[in-house]
Image 1 (tube, rainbow, N blue to C red):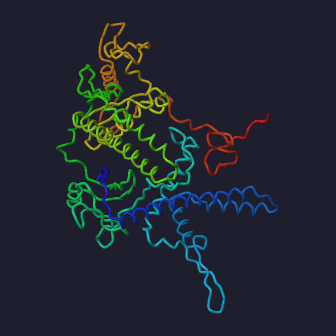
Image 2 (image 1 turned 120 degrees about the vertical axis):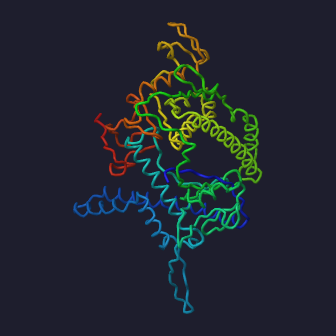
Image 3 (image 1 turned 30 degrees about the vertical axis):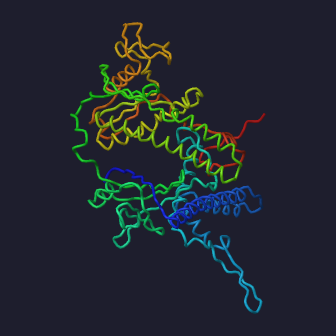
Amino acid sequence: MARHTTFRFCLDPTVEQTVALARHAGAARFAFNQCLRLHLDARERQRALSGRGGADDADQTSDADQARDEVPWSRFSLINAYNSWKRSEAAGRRFLVTADGVSQVEVTGLAWRGEVSSQVSEEAAVDLSRALAAWVESRSGKRAGRSIRHPRFKKKSTTGGSFRMRNKTAGGRTSIRVGHESPRSVTLPRIGSIRVREDTRRLRRMIAAGRARILQATITHGARRWWISIAVEAVDLHPAVQHPARDQGDTTGWVGVDRGLHALVVAGTRDGIETWRVQAPRTLATGLRRQRRLARSVSRKKRGSVNRRKAGARLARHHSRVRDARQHFLHQVSNQLVKTHDRLVLEDLNITGIMSNRRLARAVGDAAWGELARQITYKQAWRGGRVLVADRWFASSKTCSSCGTLRKDLTLKERTFECHSCGHVMDRDLNAAANLAAWAEDHTPAVGDGVGRGEVQVGDRQAAGPVTNACRRDGTGPHTRVSETSPDDAGTPIQTAPAA
């Protein structure tokens, strides 16, 4: 079993099961917030001990080291801290008064902890650990991309909420089962069998044949519906649907994929032969008039009223339909590309930078270039193909695919590329696809040169990666304060501000 995939179904729970699902979602939110509170309190104690003055410096150092070790950072330490807290007096207690008038305190812990599965709080602690690790790596410069904010407390919402459960095996029986009581049902621990709206035949057949194994299930609530995403570990695709292996040293057969707004995808070879073209559906722009009307309806309702909650639910359902239509179309496009081409080359687009342009942000977000590239990447790996990401600074749209002349005065409104040197005339998007295919054939190594089938190679970004030798001042950066973190917390050296 070498690939991971997900099956998503819409749940059809009863009234009692809806209450149980909401209880588990609330328990996950509560566990996340409590783990974050335990983590912040431990850091405050560590900071207080490290900055405490005293005559006995040795005792102060030992106390600080001991407090530093007690700060929960990893998933295991957070789980242990939460499990210890939920049984303590701080989590719950009650006073008992005997017939003689003597009162005593009985430690109960969380009174409702037995009503939900313990996996919910454990997975919430795992999520917090990942968020803290991402924040530390972002502050230390080890994580590329936009800066990651510190984890914040989750708020209670009537339209959201999610939780995750792992699949455990006990006595030859798994805790998460599909089609156990009825073909269209999913069985979850502590909740029971829940009906689903879609057909589960494909997943049931894969599990029965031993070609798939359930890893975990994530249950989410949105747009007045409960959804379940079942992550499975499955075997490789059948050899008949995989791409045939190429000969050693063969660097041909690349197809460039140009992503745009007028045409979502234009695929072409090095010779300028267009293999496929598909127009962008613009799902967001199509439903924008209805979205504005629904948003105005929400804003006109009184805050906290039932009518405002209903109007918000209608707006959420509209956003859900737009998202589902976009996802369905992107899956169709990515499937067509990976089925018909075994070698694809994509552009390394700076989508975050393009989204900063207020004139293009909505159209770029509606096109979902990043999601399309993600789907092409993992689907091509499933079929044994290869995906190459071209250099970000390669001017594929402004370079002539015939003579290689760079035309710097090309504007966005020109849909036809005309070369002033050789007179070559070609569609702008097809010219970019041809340049990408030529770039891939000139820069990609052979199959036996370190890159195998199903792998992704990224071109040189020319110093576009993160700076690893930079130092920051104490309290610098967005959303930070002086003495907010210490070198042990963030893992980066701190430089004091120079004297004035």
